[in-house]
Image (tube, rainbow, N blue to C red; front, side, top):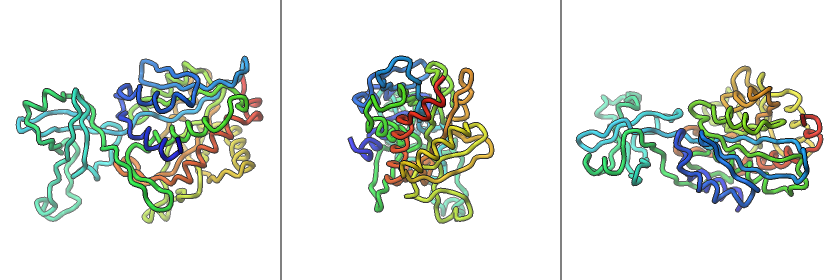
Length: 346
Protein backbone atom coordinates (compact mmCIF):
# COMPACT_ATOMS: atom_id res chain seq x y z
CA UNK A 1 0.00 0.00 0.00
CA UNK A 2 1.41 3.41 -0.94
CA UNK A 3 1.84 6.07 1.73
CA UNK A 4 -1.17 8.15 0.69
CA UNK A 5 -3.49 5.14 0.80
CA UNK A 6 -2.03 4.05 4.13
CA UNK A 7 -2.67 7.51 5.59
CA UNK A 8 -6.28 7.74 4.44
CA UNK A 9 -7.03 4.13 5.44
CA UNK A 10 -5.75 4.56 8.98
CA UNK A 11 -7.18 8.03 9.45
CA UNK A 12 -10.62 6.83 8.30
CA UNK A 13 -10.78 4.53 11.34
CA UNK A 14 -12.93 5.69 14.23
CA UNK A 15 -10.75 6.20 17.30
CA UNK A 16 -12.06 9.11 19.35
CA UNK A 17 -10.07 9.31 22.57
CA UNK A 18 -11.46 6.78 25.05
CA UNK A 19 -13.04 4.63 22.34
CA UNK A 20 -9.94 3.41 20.52
CA UNK A 21 -10.85 -0.25 21.02
CA UNK A 22 -13.64 0.09 18.48
CA UNK A 23 -11.11 0.00 15.64
CA UNK A 24 -8.79 -2.73 16.92
CA UNK A 25 -9.62 -5.08 14.07
CA UNK A 26 -9.42 -2.28 11.53
CA UNK A 27 -5.92 -1.30 12.59
CA UNK A 28 -4.78 -4.90 12.61
CA UNK A 29 -6.23 -5.53 9.15
CA UNK A 30 -4.36 -2.54 7.69
CA UNK A 31 -1.00 -3.01 9.43
CA UNK A 32 -0.53 -6.63 10.37
CA UNK A 33 1.28 -7.69 7.16
CA UNK A 34 4.01 -5.14 7.92
CA UNK A 35 4.81 -6.59 11.35
CA UNK A 36 5.41 -9.94 13.02
CA UNK A 37 3.11 -9.48 16.02
CA UNK A 38 0.24 -7.32 17.23
CA UNK A 39 -0.89 -7.01 20.85
CA UNK A 40 -3.26 -4.71 22.70
CA UNK A 41 -3.56 -3.75 26.35
CA UNK A 42 -6.17 -2.64 28.84
CA UNK A 43 -6.03 1.06 28.02
CA UNK A 44 -6.47 0.67 24.25
CA UNK A 45 -2.84 0.75 23.13
CA UNK A 46 -1.81 -1.14 20.01
CA UNK A 47 1.73 -2.53 19.85
CA UNK A 48 2.97 -3.79 16.49
CA UNK A 49 6.32 -5.62 16.66
CA UNK A 50 8.90 -6.34 13.95
CA UNK A 51 11.85 -8.43 15.11
CA UNK A 52 15.36 -8.21 13.70
CA UNK A 53 16.08 -11.91 14.32
CA UNK A 54 18.99 -11.43 16.73
CA UNK A 55 18.98 -12.41 20.41
CA UNK A 56 19.29 -9.69 23.05
CA UNK A 57 18.78 -6.98 20.45
CA UNK A 58 17.95 -3.44 21.57
CA UNK A 59 14.29 -2.50 21.83
CA UNK A 60 13.50 0.46 19.59
CA UNK A 61 10.20 2.19 20.35
CA UNK A 62 8.33 4.24 17.76
CA UNK A 63 5.30 6.10 19.12
CA UNK A 64 2.39 7.81 17.42
CA UNK A 65 -0.99 8.19 19.07
CA UNK A 66 -3.96 6.25 17.77
CA UNK A 67 -6.67 8.38 19.35
CA UNK A 68 -8.25 11.36 17.63
CA UNK A 69 -10.22 14.37 18.78
CA UNK A 70 -14.00 14.16 18.81
CA UNK A 71 -17.06 14.71 20.94
CA UNK A 72 -19.37 12.85 23.32
CA UNK A 73 -23.16 12.80 23.64
CA UNK A 74 -24.39 14.53 26.79
CA UNK A 75 -28.13 14.71 26.15
CA UNK A 76 -30.91 13.77 23.74
CA UNK A 77 -33.64 16.40 23.84
CA UNK A 78 -37.35 15.72 23.66
CA UNK A 79 -37.32 17.20 20.15
CA UNK A 80 -34.69 14.68 19.02
CA UNK A 81 -31.65 16.95 18.98
CA UNK A 82 -28.33 15.77 20.41
CA UNK A 83 -26.20 17.86 22.74
CA UNK A 84 -22.52 17.07 23.13
CA UNK A 85 -19.23 18.05 24.72
CA UNK A 86 -15.61 18.28 23.56
CA UNK A 87 -13.22 15.32 23.72
CA UNK A 88 -9.57 16.19 23.17
CA UNK A 89 -9.75 19.77 21.96
CA UNK A 90 -11.91 20.13 18.85
CA UNK A 91 -11.58 23.58 17.30
CA UNK A 92 -15.16 24.66 18.00
CA UNK A 93 -15.02 27.47 15.44
CA UNK A 94 -15.59 24.94 12.67
CA UNK A 95 -18.47 23.04 14.29
CA UNK A 96 -21.56 24.98 13.14
CA UNK A 97 -22.74 23.20 9.98
CA UNK A 98 -20.25 20.34 10.38
CA UNK A 99 -21.19 16.79 9.37
CA UNK A 100 -20.67 14.32 12.23
CA UNK A 101 -21.20 10.64 13.02
CA UNK A 102 -22.52 9.36 16.35
CA UNK A 103 -21.10 5.90 17.08
CA UNK A 104 -23.70 3.82 18.91
CA UNK A 105 -25.49 0.51 18.47
CA UNK A 106 -26.11 1.92 15.03
CA UNK A 107 -24.07 4.76 13.57
CA UNK A 108 -26.12 7.92 13.11
CA UNK A 109 -25.12 10.82 10.88
CA UNK A 110 -26.07 14.40 11.62
CA UNK A 111 -25.30 18.07 11.02
CA UNK A 112 -24.53 20.62 13.72
CA UNK A 113 -27.20 23.29 13.80
CA UNK A 114 -25.79 26.62 12.62
CA UNK A 115 -27.42 29.82 13.83
CA UNK A 116 -27.37 32.35 10.95
CA UNK A 117 -25.25 35.41 11.79
CA UNK A 118 -28.27 37.64 11.11
CA UNK A 119 -29.98 36.04 14.09
CA UNK A 120 -26.83 36.64 16.14
CA UNK A 121 -27.17 40.37 15.65
CA UNK A 122 -24.82 40.36 12.67
CA UNK A 123 -21.79 39.53 14.82
CA UNK A 124 -19.93 36.58 13.22
CA UNK A 125 -17.86 36.15 16.39
CA UNK A 126 -20.93 35.60 18.56
CA UNK A 127 -20.63 31.82 18.40
CA UNK A 128 -22.17 29.66 21.14
CA UNK A 129 -20.10 27.44 23.42
CA UNK A 130 -19.92 23.78 22.44
CA UNK A 131 -22.38 22.80 25.19
CA UNK A 132 -24.95 25.09 23.59
CA UNK A 133 -24.74 23.49 20.16
CA UNK A 134 -27.18 20.89 18.86
CA UNK A 135 -26.72 18.02 16.42
CA UNK A 136 -29.64 17.47 14.06
CA UNK A 137 -30.01 13.86 12.89
CA UNK A 138 -33.60 14.00 11.65
CA UNK A 139 -34.60 11.18 14.03
CA UNK A 140 -37.13 11.47 16.82
CA UNK A 141 -35.94 11.19 20.41
CA UNK A 142 -37.71 7.84 20.72
CA UNK A 143 -35.89 6.36 17.72
CA UNK A 144 -32.55 7.95 18.59
CA UNK A 145 -32.51 6.38 22.05
CA UNK A 146 -32.74 2.95 20.44
CA UNK A 147 -29.50 3.60 18.54
CA UNK A 148 -27.37 5.88 20.74
CA UNK A 149 -27.02 6.75 24.41
CA UNK A 150 -25.42 9.27 26.71
CA UNK A 151 -21.63 8.87 26.48
CA UNK A 152 -21.60 7.74 22.85
CA UNK A 153 -18.62 9.08 20.92
CA UNK A 154 -18.99 11.48 18.01
CA UNK A 155 -16.49 11.91 15.21
CA UNK A 156 -16.04 13.79 11.95
CA UNK A 157 -17.02 12.27 8.62
CA UNK A 158 -14.06 10.32 7.16
CA UNK A 159 -13.86 12.15 3.84
CA UNK A 160 -10.58 13.04 2.12
CA UNK A 161 -9.80 15.52 -0.64
CA UNK A 162 -6.73 15.54 -2.88
CA UNK A 163 -5.32 19.02 -3.33
CA UNK A 164 -2.67 20.34 -5.69
CA UNK A 165 0.97 20.00 -4.77
CA UNK A 166 0.86 16.51 -3.23
CA UNK A 167 -1.46 17.69 -0.47
CA UNK A 168 -4.49 16.00 1.03
CA UNK A 169 -7.16 17.23 3.44
CA UNK A 170 -9.30 15.30 5.90
CA UNK A 171 -9.82 14.30 9.50
CA UNK A 172 -7.52 12.66 12.07
CA UNK A 173 -4.11 13.33 10.51
CA UNK A 174 -3.37 14.14 14.15
CA UNK A 175 -1.99 11.62 14.69
CA UNK A 176 -2.81 8.52 12.68
CA UNK A 177 -1.03 10.03 9.66
CA UNK A 178 2.16 9.79 11.71
CA UNK A 179 1.30 6.18 12.49
CA UNK A 180 1.07 5.60 8.76
CA UNK A 181 4.51 7.18 8.32
CA UNK A 182 5.90 4.82 10.96
CA UNK A 183 4.34 1.76 9.36
CA UNK A 184 5.52 2.80 5.91
CA UNK A 185 9.04 3.45 7.18
CA UNK A 186 9.22 0.11 9.01
CA UNK A 187 7.81 -1.75 6.05
CA UNK A 188 10.45 -0.28 3.74
CA UNK A 189 13.40 -2.00 5.47
CA UNK A 190 14.45 -5.61 5.85
CA UNK A 191 14.40 -7.10 9.32
CA UNK A 192 18.08 -8.05 9.19
CA UNK A 193 19.01 -4.42 8.47
CA UNK A 194 17.38 -3.11 11.65
CA UNK A 195 19.52 -2.19 14.65
CA UNK A 196 17.11 -3.98 17.00
CA UNK A 197 13.56 -5.17 17.51
CA UNK A 198 11.07 -2.46 16.59
CA UNK A 199 7.99 -1.78 18.73
CA UNK A 200 5.44 0.51 17.13
CA UNK A 201 3.30 1.85 19.97
CA UNK A 202 0.08 3.18 18.45
CA UNK A 203 -0.88 4.71 21.77
CA UNK A 204 -4.24 5.56 23.28
CA UNK A 205 -5.40 8.66 25.07
CA UNK A 206 -2.83 11.24 23.98
CA UNK A 207 -5.44 13.91 23.32
CA UNK A 208 -6.88 13.63 26.82
CA UNK A 209 -4.23 12.27 29.21
CA UNK A 210 -1.09 10.96 27.43
CA UNK A 211 -1.31 7.94 29.74
CA UNK A 212 -1.25 5.43 26.88
CA UNK A 213 2.39 6.28 26.22
CA UNK A 214 3.19 5.96 29.91
CA UNK A 215 1.63 2.51 30.32
CA UNK A 216 2.72 1.27 26.88
CA UNK A 217 6.26 2.47 27.35
CA UNK A 218 6.36 0.87 30.78
CA UNK A 219 5.35 -2.53 29.47
CA UNK A 220 7.76 -2.43 26.52
CA UNK A 221 10.74 -0.98 28.47
CA UNK A 222 12.56 0.24 25.33
CA UNK A 223 16.23 1.14 25.10
CA UNK A 224 15.46 4.33 23.17
CA UNK A 225 12.52 5.88 21.40
CA UNK A 226 11.28 8.19 18.68
CA UNK A 227 7.96 9.97 19.22
CA UNK A 228 6.25 11.24 16.08
CA UNK A 229 3.40 13.74 16.26
CA UNK A 230 2.06 16.58 14.18
CA UNK A 231 3.06 20.21 14.46
CA UNK A 232 1.63 23.44 13.10
CA UNK A 233 2.68 24.26 9.55
CA UNK A 234 3.19 27.81 8.35
CA UNK A 235 0.10 29.62 7.04
CA UNK A 236 -0.33 33.20 5.74
CA UNK A 237 -1.39 34.48 9.16
CA UNK A 238 1.62 32.94 10.96
CA UNK A 239 4.43 34.73 9.09
CA UNK A 240 5.91 35.99 12.37
CA UNK A 241 6.09 32.51 13.90
CA UNK A 242 8.95 30.02 13.37
CA UNK A 243 6.83 27.33 11.72
CA UNK A 244 7.87 24.83 9.04
CA UNK A 245 6.62 25.34 5.50
CA UNK A 246 5.01 22.57 3.49
CA UNK A 247 7.61 20.69 1.49
CA UNK A 248 10.45 21.38 3.94
CA UNK A 249 10.35 17.82 5.30
CA UNK A 250 10.20 16.45 8.82
CA UNK A 251 10.66 18.67 11.88
CA UNK A 252 13.31 17.60 14.39
CA UNK A 253 12.42 19.10 17.76
CA UNK A 254 14.79 20.19 20.50
CA UNK A 255 13.27 20.36 23.98
CA UNK A 256 14.44 20.06 27.60
CA UNK A 257 12.74 16.67 27.91
CA UNK A 258 14.18 15.13 24.75
CA UNK A 259 17.61 13.52 24.79
CA UNK A 260 20.11 16.00 23.34
CA UNK A 261 22.70 13.41 22.31
CA UNK A 262 20.09 11.26 20.57
CA UNK A 263 18.58 14.29 18.85
CA UNK A 264 21.98 15.38 17.58
CA UNK A 265 22.67 11.89 16.27
CA UNK A 266 19.35 11.86 14.43
CA UNK A 267 20.17 15.28 12.99
CA UNK A 268 23.45 13.94 11.63
CA UNK A 269 21.69 10.83 10.33
CA UNK A 270 19.07 12.83 8.43
CA UNK A 271 21.75 15.07 6.98
CA UNK A 272 23.89 12.12 5.85
CA UNK A 273 20.87 10.37 4.31
CA UNK A 274 19.78 13.61 2.60
CA UNK A 275 16.34 13.39 4.19
CA UNK A 276 14.76 16.86 4.17
CA UNK A 277 14.12 18.32 7.62
CA UNK A 278 14.05 21.50 9.64
CA UNK A 279 14.69 22.01 13.34
CA UNK A 280 12.22 23.30 15.91
CA UNK A 281 12.53 24.19 19.57
CA UNK A 282 10.21 23.87 22.57
CA UNK A 283 11.32 25.59 25.75
CA UNK A 284 9.09 23.51 27.98
CA UNK A 285 6.36 20.98 27.32
CA UNK A 286 6.25 19.54 23.82
CA UNK A 287 2.52 18.81 23.96
CA UNK A 288 3.27 15.26 22.79
CA UNK A 289 3.78 11.78 24.20
CA UNK A 290 7.47 12.63 24.59
CA UNK A 291 6.33 14.36 27.80
CA UNK A 292 5.34 10.99 29.25
CA UNK A 293 7.62 8.51 27.53
CA UNK A 294 10.90 9.90 28.76
CA UNK A 295 9.65 9.39 32.35
CA UNK A 296 8.83 5.71 31.81
CA UNK A 297 10.65 3.23 34.04
CA UNK A 298 14.14 4.49 34.76
CA UNK A 299 13.91 6.93 31.86
CA UNK A 300 13.82 6.44 28.10
CA UNK A 301 16.15 8.46 25.82
CA UNK A 302 13.66 10.04 23.44
CA UNK A 303 13.81 12.05 20.22
CA UNK A 304 10.81 13.95 18.84
CA UNK A 305 10.08 14.20 15.11
CA UNK A 306 7.04 16.06 13.82
CA UNK A 307 4.90 16.19 10.68
CA UNK A 308 3.71 19.71 9.81
CA UNK A 309 -0.02 20.05 9.14
CA UNK A 310 -2.48 22.90 8.74
CA UNK A 311 -5.91 23.30 10.38
CA UNK A 312 -4.97 21.13 13.36
CA UNK A 313 -7.90 19.75 15.41
CA UNK A 314 -10.42 20.31 12.66
CA UNK A 315 -12.28 18.09 10.19
CA UNK A 316 -10.08 19.27 7.31
CA UNK A 317 -6.50 19.00 8.46
CA UNK A 318 -4.05 19.35 5.56
CA UNK A 319 -0.69 17.67 5.02
CA UNK A 320 1.91 17.52 2.28
CA UNK A 321 2.86 14.01 1.18
CA UNK A 322 6.46 15.13 0.62
CA UNK A 323 6.74 15.86 4.34
CA UNK A 324 5.05 12.58 5.21
CA UNK A 325 7.55 10.71 3.05
CA UNK A 326 10.41 12.52 4.79
CA UNK A 327 9.04 11.36 8.16
CA UNK A 328 8.75 7.79 6.87
CA UNK A 329 12.32 7.95 5.58
CA UNK A 330 13.46 9.27 8.95
CA UNK A 331 11.87 6.23 10.60
CA UNK A 332 13.66 3.85 8.23
CA UNK A 333 17.02 5.51 8.87
CA UNK A 334 16.47 5.64 12.64
CA UNK A 335 15.64 1.97 13.13
CA UNK A 336 18.54 0.89 10.91
CA UNK A 337 21.19 3.06 12.54
CA UNK A 338 23.70 0.68 14.10
CA UNK A 339 25.54 3.67 15.58
CA UNK A 340 22.47 4.81 17.51
CA UNK A 341 21.76 1.21 18.54
CA UNK A 342 25.26 0.73 19.92
CA UNK A 343 25.20 4.07 21.74
CA UNK A 344 21.83 3.65 23.44
CA UNK A 345 21.48 -0.12 23.92
CA UNK A 346 21.22 -0.93 27.63
